Structures are given as structure tokens and as C-alpha cells.
Image (cartoon, rainbow, N blue to C red; front, side, top):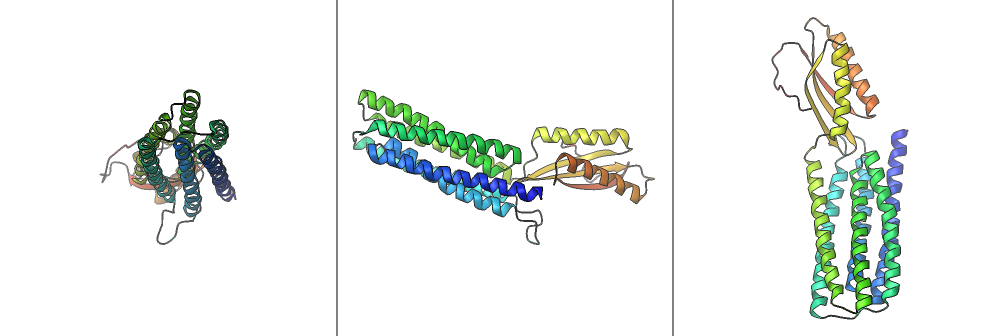
Length: 302
């Protein structure tokens, strides 16, 4: 039941992101229309990417929550990373459109009108994105959701972009230097490209079966150390991997050669139970070997 509630909560966070994207896209689009500013237009284009990314993220959350089946025996957790990859690609497309429009406006400059209204609308959009972005990042870290974290980080990038546009447009409004408008848009475009690169890099790293975070590995290690102290066992091989929100731990456990299969099984069950208590839903795979037996691999990876 808790798992179902958690999934519904994550989906509600993504629905909030979709609502925020629609609202800010409208506000920024209105600011661009009123002012004719390519800087505000670039900001509006990024919000349109936010909307598409949030919809893709919601879809990814639904797919990743599906239970394991015959074709996907380790579940669908990596669907979240595919969503983050798609979001990174969309960021690149938006950045390209912004840079192209900015260069075009540099060649054929145009004055900015109604800058006061534009600044007001853009400020309101930034406040909305800031609130939702912080919320998504915190929820993503708490629930280990790559989709929520990626979407939250994208919104925070949007906030910094908007702040840059606001400062620049205020300078344009005060000085009358219209050429600053497309220059601001160019800076925004380059910044978005950098954010897209980082998002793609992190997503690819996760798709390559990345280990659990160091802090989580340390907690697992503490539990295993406690078992080695109270039982006559040792863990000669330890591996972890993350599949979206799913944690997996692979262990080789050495037991005294005289132990029965039943006793080895009981201790292995205790290890699985303590790690599941630490991280509910964690899948633990334990290979049992008699002490002193040659190993196929002898590696302490954590």
C-alpha cells in the first residue's frame, strides 16, 4: 500500500510541474508578445520545453512503476533515465532555437516595448518556477526519482535563465541599448546548452548501471560488518546497482564449511531482512560459499 501511495505522490508532483509549465509558458509568451523582446521569447521557449519534459516525465514515472515481467525481469526502473535523456535532448533543441533567433535579431535589431509589463510577468514566472523546482528536487532526492530530480533541476536552470533575462532587460529599459536584448538571449542559449549537457551526462551514467550513492553503501556496509561480528561469516564480494528507484545488492557470503544448507539459508535470510529494513523494497542476491573455497571473483567493490 505504501508503494502505491508513493507512486501516486510522485505522479502528483509531475502534474504540479505540468501546471507550472503551462502557467509560466503563458506568462512569458505574453511578456514576449507585449515587448517584442527576443530575450523574453527565449525564456518562453524554455518553458515550452519544460512542459514537454514534464509530460514525458509523467509518462516515464508510470512506466517505471510497472512490476517486473517476462521481458523486463528487473522491472522498468530505467524508464526514468530515458525520460531524463529525452529532456536533455529537448533542452538542446530549445537552445538551438534561442541562439538562432538571437543572431537573427542581432543582424536586424528591433526596439523593446512595454518593458515594465514584461519584467513584471517574467518575475512572476520565476517565482513560480523557483517554488516548484525546489519542491521537485527535494522530493526527487527523498524518493530517489531521477525524473523528479531532472525536472526540478531543469526548472532551476530556467529560474537562473529568467534572472539573467530580467537583469538584462532592466538594463535595456534603463539605458535604451536595444542590442543588449539579443546578446542576453545568446547568453541564455549557451547556458541552456550547458545544462542540457550535464543532464545528458548524468543520465548516461545512470543507464550504465551505476552503483548506489556512497552514503547508502556505507549504511549497507555497517549492517554487513555487524553480521560478520556476530556470525561466523564474511562477505567476500559486494556489489550494488540502481535501477531507477530500485536498489539491488549482490553479495558473496562465506560460511563455515561444516554448516548445513539450512543454517546458511537462515543467515542469508537474516541479511536480506536487515537490508530490506534499511531500504524497503531493496532486492538482495546472496551467493553462499564454504570458507576457503576458491572464488570466481575476489573483489570488495565496497
